[in-house]
Length: 410
Image (cartoon, rainbow, N blue to C red; front, side, top):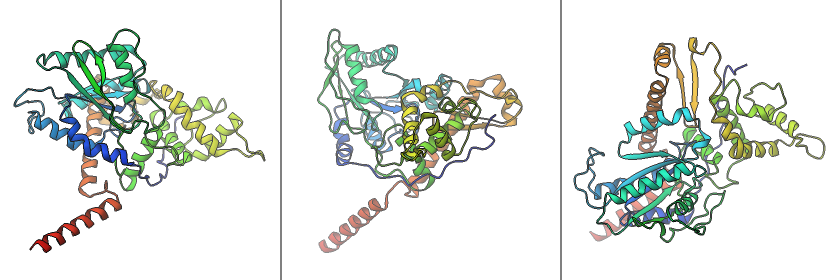
């Protein structure tokens, strides 16, 4: 039986997590880009929009303009000398349904034609080989350059260090040591690394960089949901969120992705039905797993931790399977979701297009989701909803200081 209504849970206000090493790298980024030929921006396939790092976008835009790309037409280069390529890698592709990858790639290509987009998983040698071949191809287009320098950027815990270790083994034959330390927790890399050789011929070098979080996740429901999403993929330091809040949102999202047979049913007793009640779910989960306190009460907190950990390590693979649809799905509105950033409804007037070309239908819906996301982030910026009260206070203090200095000089 499918859930008739899937309510959004009440989400906590997002915490602020922007350590000093992130601020330092953000300020130094323009200088690093001056000696960079290719930017590899890594995002998480489960959050292909939320894991866009808006903190770094301004520096990347200026870098492209300085290298000759047309500000009015991002696919046109006015003058070409040094290499200047922006490659976006959607990592952990095995945790999202295969059916959405091509529609998403086409939708992003229409909106961001200057970006090259690849879906990758470091567990798939073919994906690493494709990326290696792309870097070699870019290097060969600039035969007069002594070397190709690659800068890897992205939010915390999206797999930057793991990528470089894997590329090094792919590009250099023979035994190679692990170049960078990796961790399941965000914030392991805190400084720009020394250069790492990825290829001997042509010579390709790369820099690993610290994961950079947004200085402020935003106000209202948008900021709250953004924070919970990033915490679920372990992009935010553990302990800043209550696990029960993450479990509540995870339950909501798994119900959206598949309201008939959500992936979490395998954790519950046989014959269980989907539920949108987090307390009922955690009670049943704790009972099934024998998570009891001393007095025989269900350990709700422990069940919440187990649920989130299960999804990160195993459950994400189950959500990548195609969602079951009722047999009458083409005669009634259908709600679909892909990853944790996409959700749309197929209305009656759209059913014919869905029947004729399902991939085109999904691409069109994804284009609209992307457009809505960009409009929302632009609106947040105009209304300063992406700026914390502390940041506003500091800016006002700086403006007052500059006014006093100007008055004193007169």
